Amino acid sequence: MHRMVATNARVLAQMRKGIVEFCVLAHLRHGEAYGREIAGTLANDPAVLTSEGTLYPLLARLRKQGWVETSWTPSDSGPPRRYYALTEDGAAALEAFTAAWGPFHSAVTAILEDDG
Image (cartoon, rainbow, N blue to C red):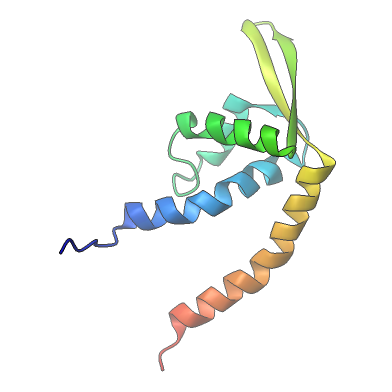
C-alpha cells in the first residue's frame, strides 16, 4: 500500500487550486492588466503563484467562465498585449468569495489552533 505524505509543496498546491483565481479577480478589480503584470504582482509571494506558466491557463478558464474579458492593446516595446478586465459576473464571483473567505478562514484557524 502506497502512503502519501503531505509536503509543504503539495499542501500549497492544493490550496492554490481554489484560491489563485480569486487573487487574479481581486487584482483586476483595480483595473485592467496584462498577464505579465498580473503574474508579477501575484508572484511577489511564491505561496500564491509559483510560475507565470500556470497563470495563462487560469486566465483562459476565467475568460471561458465569463469572469474576465480581454482586449488587445498595441505596445511600444513589442507585440500587442492582451489585457484582462473584470466583468460583472467576475465581480460578483469575487464578492461571493470575499464574503465566504472571512468565516472560512476563521473556522479553519480555530480548528488548527484548538489545543483540546
